[in-house]
Length: 334
Image 1 (cartoon, helix red, strand yellow):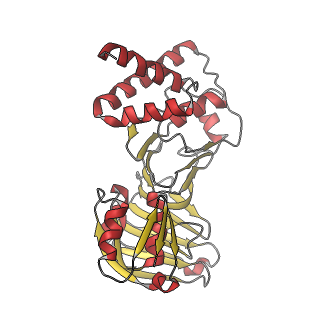
Image 2 (cartoon, helix red, strand yellow):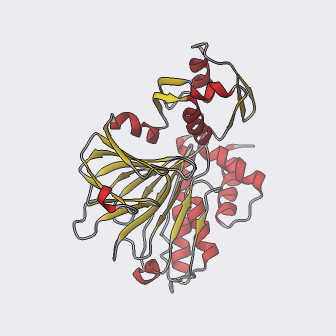
Image 3 (tube, one colour):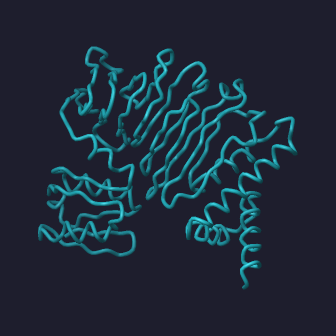
C-alpha cells in the first residue's frame, strides 16, 4: 500500500471511529497506528478538531443527544472509560471535548458552554486498570487519576460549587478561588481547599484513606467526627483508618508519593500485599500468594516509568525472599 492510499485508509478509520462505525478489530488497529508516532497523533488530533468544527456548523441550534456527546467523550482517551450521565440534557457546545492519545494516559478537557445544562448533570469518569488519566476542569484545576479510579463533578461545578467525588487515587493542582472552595468527597472524609496541590488515595478496597499535601494548606474533614478534622501543612500526610475512625498525621516525601502521576513507583517499607495491590491496578494483573507468609514481606524501592512489571518483579525477587511465576496476567508468588 503506497503512502497516499495508506493515509486515506487511516483517515477512513478515524472518520469511522468518530461515527462509531468501526469494528473492535478496526478500533484496535487505529489505536496502534495513533500510538505509533507523534505525527500520527497530530494528524488524529487535527481530524478530530475538523470533525468537531463541522459538527458545530451543521448543528447551530446546539441540540445534541447523549450518544453523540459520549462519542466526543470517549474519543478523548480510552474507549474503555465510561461517561455516565444522570439526566438528559441539550445545548452542549460541539467543541466540548478535544483529546489525543497519550500512550497509557488519557487527556480530558472538561468545559461547559451552557450553564443550565451543566447544573443538570453529573459527569463521571472511570479509569481502567493499567491506565492513568489527566483532566482539566472548567475552573482550571488539573487532576491526575490513577488506575481503577472513579471521578465525578457535581452539578453546578465552577458556578455554584467546586465539589467533586473521588473513589481511587487522584493528584490535584487546584486553581485558586477564595469564593468557591474546592472540595473532594471521599466517602468518610472531605478535603477542602482554596488553591493548592495535594494527593488523595481513597480506594474502596483499602482500609485507609491517605491525604498528602505538596503545597498550600488543606482541611481534611472527618464527616463522622468533625472534631477530629485536621488542618495540614506541606510535606504532611494524614491517614484516616476506616475501621477505627482515627487519623494519623506524619511527615512524608510528597515527591515520592506523587510519582505515580508519571508512571513511576515508589515503595517505602511497604508490605508485599500492598505492593501487589498497587501493581495489580497499574498493570492490570492478578497476584496469587501461594505462600501466604510472603504477603508480610516489606520492600523499599523506586522504579522508573519505563520499568516493566517484569523489571520490577525481577529486582524484587533478587532479594531471594520469594520466587514468582507469571502466566499472562496471573502472577503466582512462592
